[in-house]
Length: 231
Image (cartoon, rainbow, N blue to C red):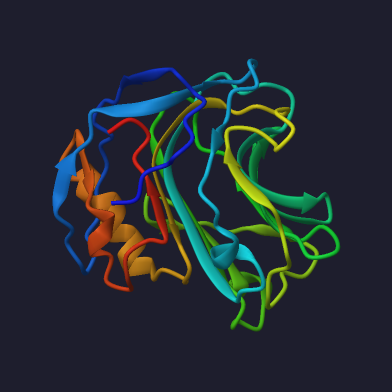
């Protein structure tokens, strides 16, 4: 397992069973999941990730997956994930005005957005970038609880990422636009996970409340980083 090495968010809480259903082609080992991490949306607390330049810089594929529970979303852009050089060269996942935006920016804004899940409900979210596709819908996909979402796109999703910076969970790199909610089991892969794999990650918890998938068993390969957020 790969664990974060810089913990700046002190609030760790019990994680309830997450419920749901579905049937993926692959079955993971279910492992215990007793904790998640609370981001309060106001204090500037954030989680500094390991050096992930090889995962995000100048690549044609990556996947970010995590469990999220939004709490009373604030009016600003609540940033879940950021890897940023500047506002034109950044990978972002953030919630704003009832939508979640997924950016793969190279010299300008390129994103897909979709309605955010309900608040106070655990949702597994996966962002899959695959630059080998020829259309926006092929290059950037988003899944909620294993189900692909229909995105609205802004700009043309690039075939290759740019050069970015340091990765954070819970806010922008300057500590602003804080996320308000819980995050758990953050996995980052240097490849595009299949829909079946993402469904199986969700199913492990859906069928085993209080447990999650052992991500080291991912059929396409182990994650480049795996942050268990308290476990």
